[in-house]
Image 1 (cartoon, rainbow, N blue to C red):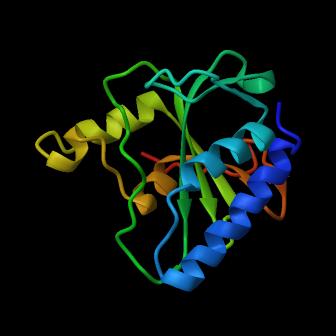
Image 2 (cartoon, rainbow, N blue to C red):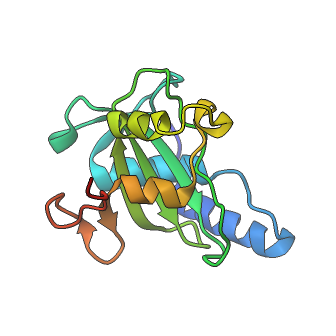
Length: 168
């Protein structure tokens, strides 16, 4: 058992990752671990102790039993376009994807959630796309098809208050 709490360790990891990027100009590859910690804490998820390869957490409370993939993206330059989220494992078993958007200090600023059926519908719209077959999706596209579920300013957001779905 560690002398340090997980929360203190993650806070130190945030600080070190931000300092490393400032010193080298390159990100330290720990944003996914920080995103998993933040999503679990902020959205009442239980992280899987053993990596399943298909999902990272199980929902509790309003997400009870939901199998969730968690993705993290630190945004260092908001003007930069073409940013992508990590590969989506479309053929595997999971129920939703949570994307934690972090600032340059690896602090969460927004969290989006999208159910698997919506992602599969979107990927089917462009059947011959190599990117879709690999489960690649732009950050902008994910934000469009998902729901904003948490912000730094508001905390948890009720689905009826903010829905980012384009009407069909």
